[in-house]
Length: 473
Image (cartoon, rainbow, N blue to C red; front, side):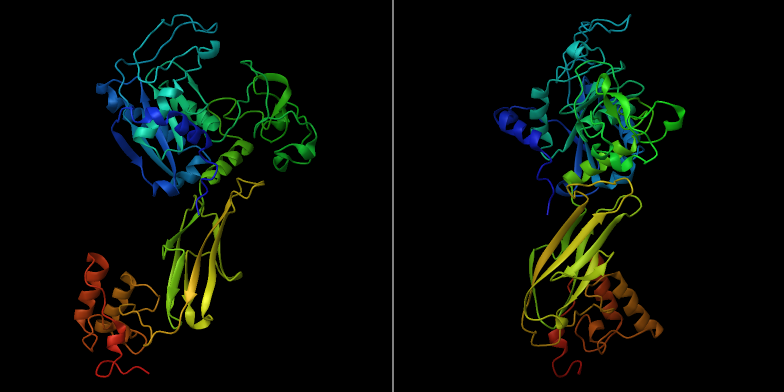
């Protein structure tokens, strides 16, 4: 089950609007920088070059690596690095840099007026604010669609040492010395819908996960993080420097709008996200992904004989610390906890259909409120238990009777053959990989070839159990 139900609304709108232009977008080299898993089971982050000429792509890759190092060293992203894939698109511009029309009232003295022929037509001074560095979204979307249509989050990295960036549909940042910090801050906007927490810049306040005009403690959206001893509104005094509260001044407005903490990355660079912004970031991760996915067998409907045992396995995404916990249920009844594999023994089940479910929930302490249940996910199989097979079901080669053939079976077979270890069960038949009627070193060779070299599968156990081979009860 995929949780991409609401992850790409803006992207889908863009796809609809720009479908006619996608075919015209240029195709550029795409480099996979971090591949943690399949694109439909990860959050796919894309870096787009802006203002880099064809001869500057090595610099582009270095700039991206610098930003990535900062991103995945910053909590909570560092705890969820395995949830992300990262790609870089080498978009070539005719000229290096970006536009600077020098039209903003706050332009620093000494900067030049610049006009550069770049692919995305990015520019400083947007909206009359010098540091607001923005590309033309209408040019960015077709490149994404043509080159990385599976994207979830996109960065536009602009090749200029001047300080600047923007949030919005894409997280945009320059190659200023603080580029990694700018990227993380802007990702807070583009990925987690976080608001700026500073008071200047104009534009008026608005409600956001980390901004509110609410003064009633019980109604404050981050009330779960506010200690009962912390007053609201919260004074900006040393006593409350490190606590979550209700501090006045946020979303470009000095009065009437409040932020969760005295300082936070959404207010100042060089400081971590506050607990409220970190919580919203984790929720945003699970707004895009499920932690658990059906792995083996891959099909939702699976049939098996009534005298068989089959291992069912899920692929589990784990953040650092292993906070995702699993529970297996058979027909609504819990049967196992904290495991990624469960052996279904059809001998213990009635014939017919059975619902096998795996529930997963991230118990991270970074999240205290999850009103939409984003941190919980599940996958399932419908298991059809059929009539028993005509011969006892023994998976030849499954020496340890784990319901799967793996390297551990090779170890067990070697120990039995050469070291007097425990015999394969039942009645040694599981070790006769080549159906010779005896367990020998040839069976070890056959099993090694099958497991590691995709060789011939172990022989049919039903053949082994006919007269003349193994006399199993």
